Image 1 (cartoon, rainbow, N blue to C red):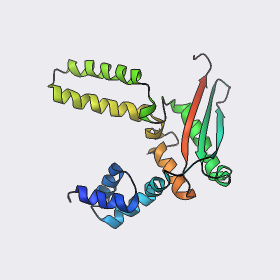
Image 2: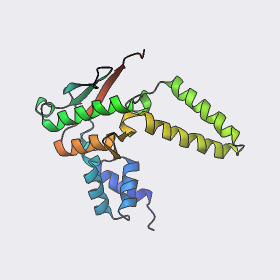
Image 3: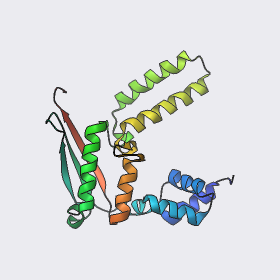
Image 4: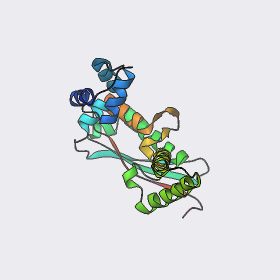
Length: 199
């Protein structure tokens, strides 16, 4: 197995603008072949998404989804750069899919940074208590807690969740595919989910 060096990751990152972890994964998947790694990232849309990340988004749409029976509803704001894209079928289908996904999976936030600190502290405390029950050394317990927190983020952060219609990809993968296809910066800005009987 070829060792992936920091220099290789940097070279790929400079070439594509994708994140370090994505570059490392691409190099691992492609057997450290730089060109294959670029193709891997292009297929995932990450290189394009990263290049467009700084561009202003003043257009978009508010998409709603109401589940049959009217007891569950979602409203989500998705932004893009131009009105032309906001009106496109691909963009509107993406918005509908995201709204439906939120209704079905009920994420706490779009990204980990949006989860309230008190919720994270409570989860960490629960995982710490569970880890202490194992009687393992402190450094092992920290790894157990980190692993459980990573799983918590995957389960509760919209972009990290497995997409409800295709669990082989995340919502972030779906977003990056759309950015690569359309060629504009797109982001899920905010959402709200209403359910009858819930405060």
